[in-house]
Length: 232
Length: 366
Image (tube, rainbow over all chains, first blue to last red; front, side, top):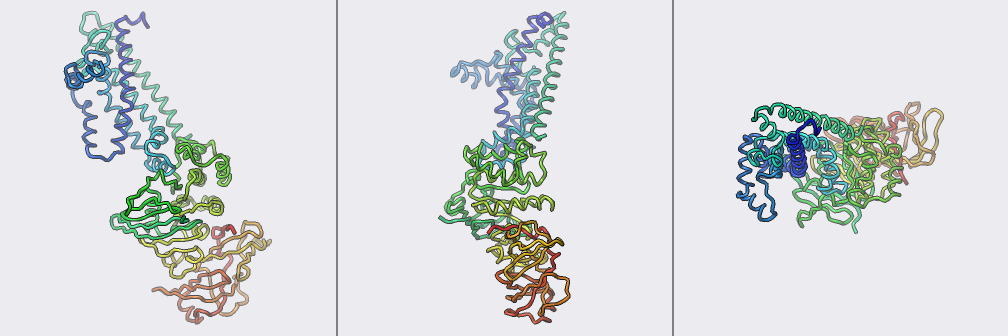
């Protein structure tokens, strides 16, 4: 693999995997929480929350990236806060790429998890309540095990989206080799220089391979979980 | 300390108005009524799944809901067992996992000995490793009952646990419920719209109609009350005879000793000497002034007319004293006039053996 891919290409693939992994992992807890609120919550502002979550799906990615830069850039309100209090800088760093990927993938993850929560019979949760389980305990012991296939599907979708995120990432954190040059950015860069087509093609092949592998693995896992949940 | 369950409720939901004041003593209290009478609303309020507009609910003296004092204990703190009509087993857990769920989430609940006892009583030993999806309807309900019992409840609520089952499954599960009634030392509220189930299982009955309590009392009293017949349904109504199995005959019949003599029924699957209760439907009882001879009905009991009650239709309901038991007979007004029936009169009740179904005969402790 190291021989087949040049060091620069290898770097892009590794960075993309790392960004997608962290983006997915970090957005899982808020993703589940927001999906639960949207599926079960009855509160004012529910539609507003729904709209906000779905906004990155509809906005041009460049706009999302620019908004991120305004907010989380070193002079943005959130960016300044993070830098002064925690010493964390997101703009033009790979951590910023994680944030951009997570935000772009968030609607897909929430949607998949929300659908699976809506498929859980609230009567089961009610029964768990009569057996002495408080709301949080019901969630952990009944709801969560029943929605695991949906959570997995959401995670895979989110991972795939994070791997391919381009517009918001390049706007927010630019295209710095070794720091923020993810796989799509690398492909784009190779296509800009004469003789780069071969490298671009190799990276395209890697992208296709990773996407197919992730989908296959999730299908297998989901089928096994669904069998377990159905109790066969 | 006040034993049993005190229920006082006022609740309005759309056009439906519920107003109930009752006490469920120890034993099985059947909450009887047609669909829409408000039975499920009452158990939901007791379980805390519903906040009533006004009311007070207390179990063994402990207040769970009191709107006047703004007390509302959340469902998971009430320590009540709830058996739902559809079982509601957790599909991702095995039978054992379902049974142990309450202990897992509360850290309390039944100890090991209690687990074995409940598993034995409900016949769940062979099912523990199975998943709910592979169980029959009757097995699912038995697991649901065991799961509720193993949460160490102070009160068991059963919301039509047999309604979703066919007759064969019902017949399979009823003996377990009789055992539960005779073994459990907690009050049980049992919702039903079947007089036959009530007659077999209940120790007390509360009859609901259109959100109001029509009649409430010991099962033998309510089922033999002519004024309750309309609420119970004229074709369903019938009183309970209690007795002991005296003899099994070779021709497939069983003699039962009752307080007024003997009755002969189709084969009863119970050992000699065991106590049973039999529901005799009011419409299956005939009356005669003299002891008839050469008649196919095998059972002729001497009875005393206690009360007559007519409705708007051509029938009357006659309440009869038969030894220490009471019977109901539903006959035409024309026959009652022809026999000149009046309270205090002695006559004979004729009961066809074959009118008593296996379903109508149940075991009874004591």
